[in-house]
Length: 247
Image 1: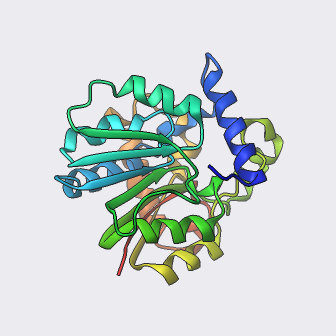
Image 2 (image 1 turned 90 degrees about the horizontal axis):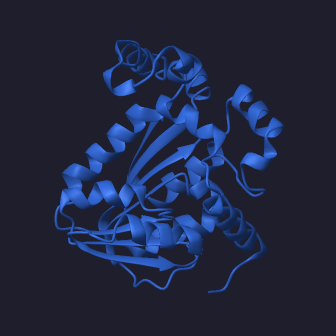
């Protein structure tokens, strides 16, 4: 597995992270993204049946555990971190579908051209060189195949300030997505749809506990989607879900 200096830093960061007994402090904020997760898995539920799926940067296999329920033909997971892949294997050892979990470099995989119906990931592209990884995803997707990713945005100044104040919470080479990244994806794929998440749901996260059953969260997520019709509020979102199709 050939790795760049950036790849090695990412590998070491995530091996160290997965060796800790406690999770990241930032995990407390992720409930503000509950509706992004809902939309992500609803898309996969509809499109995964009997599909060849690649979990791109699968981490410890949390998404895989859910996607198994949707009856794909096979799930392949790849991640640069040996510690993450080991945990993913343990979490999914009783899989009811064919499952292959590999340590590898997402920027340069050994998969065949046109191998997968869906390539998905959560919070992975911003750890990679965008141009290289988008080209690789395009290469391994079948014609008509789906590109599905949730990624953090780099356009909210308050969130960026927090990132600058907490550098040890993230790897040195992380780069939340900006306008040029979306241009790159749209130039490569077609039917690209970008949905924004996490403005009011993030601001008011201390005021609700379980987003699934929270009247306040459900109200905030609806208000967010109204606000995100305006570009100024899109720039204040925390994250996006990108859905695109290969020609």
